[in-house]
Image 1 (spheres, protein in one colour):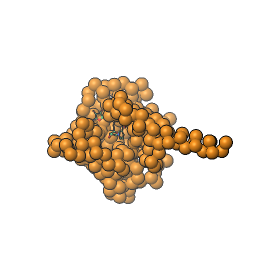
Image 2 (cartoon, protein in one colour; image 1 turned 60 degrees about the vertical axis):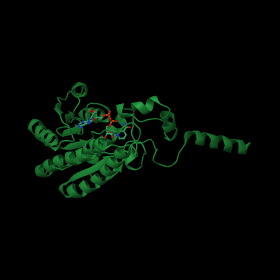
Image 3 (cartoon, protein in one colour; image 1 turned 90 degrees about the horizontal axis):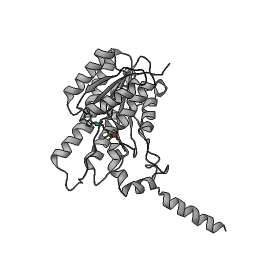
Image 4 (cartoon, protein in one colour; image 1 turned 180 degrees about the vertical axis):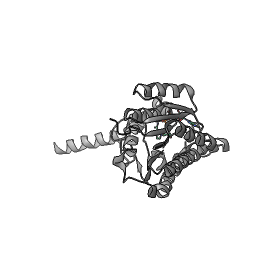
Length: 270
Ligand SMILES: NC(=O)c1ccc[n+]([C@@H]2O[C@H](COP(=O)([O-])OP(=O)(O)OC[C@H]3O[C@@H](n4cnc5c(N)ncnc54)[C@H](O)[C@@H]3O)[C@@H](O)[C@H]2O)c1
């Protein structure tokens, strides 16, 4: 028996990375999974992994920057599984090779359309079905530690993720009285395609040094939080963001500094 047996879970941006890990995790825990993305090959691979859990997923092309695609996704979910219990607004992009001074209108609009408008209408479409079904439900939006910080290089991403945090609070108030919760996950640096450029450069060592747990996270670390927030155990958790980030937002930590300070203290004791 899995804790999500008989439930239907929709995950956007599920062709790879965090979305794939969440789709597979929900299937492991017994859910019927809907894999939504714009990447057909990636979705096929996620579907293969879900099938290994003896679940037959629905794979659906959906560009979350288009409300009509999202509405069709939720309608297809109902048609296939008769319900939607868990919806994860995960699809997102991070702008690269730009900064505050060079940001173009086109890149700004694209980032906000996918990361903020897409999250809003995914939550809205799923929430309306959940309210109508009177069965409760779980809405989850994927934010980021960058929703807490600013970054000269990714201003639209930071703005969109800060916005996701506020959407979570608004939806929590809108749906709570229907027995539906809305929460966010704000991952730190996770080992996915989105961070592959960082992982190949010198910034990687610096970010690992700033992380008290001394490593990037894995998509499964994000999926574990999603599984909790989607579960019955999280029934009183509403309107908050959980940060699987290795402690990087805990303060101005430096691993090298911590080692140096330990050495200093050890020297003083001698
Ligand atoms: N990787 C990290 O370090 C990290 C950190 C914090 C937050 N996040 C967030 O986690 C989420 C997933 O990121 P990831 O790291 O797995 O990235 P990823 O690039 O590996 O995967 C993103 C997925 O979203 C899909 N996507 C992009 N545009 C889309 C659209 N318009 N409609 C539907 N799908 C679309 C892509 O095809 C891809 O499958 C994002 O919201 C991201 O901002 C990631």
